[in-house]
Length: 428
Ligand SMILES: Cc1ncc(COP(=O)(O)O)c(C=O)c1O
Image (cartoon, rainbow, N blue to C red):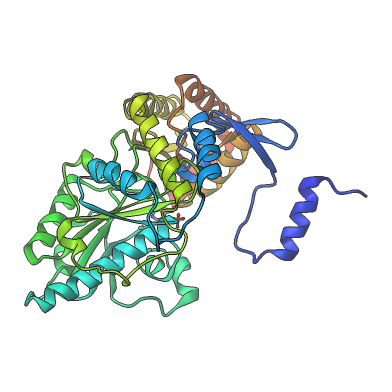
């Protein structure tokens, strides 16, 4: 029997790739706007945008034309020489973040490594200046900061860390939004408190104002750093350039990646002038990072977001999406509701369901209806659509969810009673 193209690729990958991914059996070959297209020409409404990357959707002229123009001019130089992109992009990112200096990397996890190295080096500098500051990191339960050794050491879930033990020492986890636990674990031993303003992989969970403010105050009390990971929430996804701006709290260091270069790999670590004193030439670097191509695209994407007012658009469509999810939750409350919570800001949204089985089934059923979402933290349906999403796309997604919850009311009820008999949360 002759295998089709997808099956041939699946068979080849199964034999040739180190097995790290459990892929859905779809072969994507193109895309346009908010839709991604498979090998048969079938269009899927993409509410995940490559896990929060494709901010302007697919085949956007700004991205495509900048890639074409810049790749004809210069793709790579290394960081031994100057090119036009880094200072110009840094100018935009420092203005957006309220920070002073940037280091460019290729991915989120690398941006985070740089932030961690900055914190340790800065604490060392402060010690040399007579300040009592240790080397410990306080990270949060349910956090996700990436897969390299430093990042994974500060990532909460044991399944990510345990196979690689011993990971980087000196990390302690604080209970999420638990001010008393934060106070109890904080001391002059701590060089940095590490947070996501809205946890992404952890289930789209925002910090409370009280917790975030306490983290800032504690860090200020010793000279430790407050480092905010904006890799998933940043670059306008929540309707502001940085999610911490919803709180009016300014970090010492922040990290950006995912949507930064509209689909090309690019990360950035931003810090204050004061913190940047900790690095000098040779202490950190990367061959590829911040190259002419990725930086040119990032500049073009940012300019387009500004020109088209896409932050306001993300807020408006995000609010609409969130209100429709809440309506959906109450519409199904007689079943009882499969949705136990709706969370998020702008176009970083979640509907938490009352069972992992139901969440898995819902993602699969959405896929059958040609809509891409995913599930994080077992029970949380996650929506990270492109910023160009329109209300009509939201309506299509809500109609599909409505249909799924109606058709699978049996699963919902069974899941619900299982959850409630095990002491699980219920709606409202
Ligand atoms: C908050 C956060 N930090 C760091 C990372 C790691 O980014 P990358 O996968 O680009 O290394 C992610 C990825 O999901 C993330 O959501």
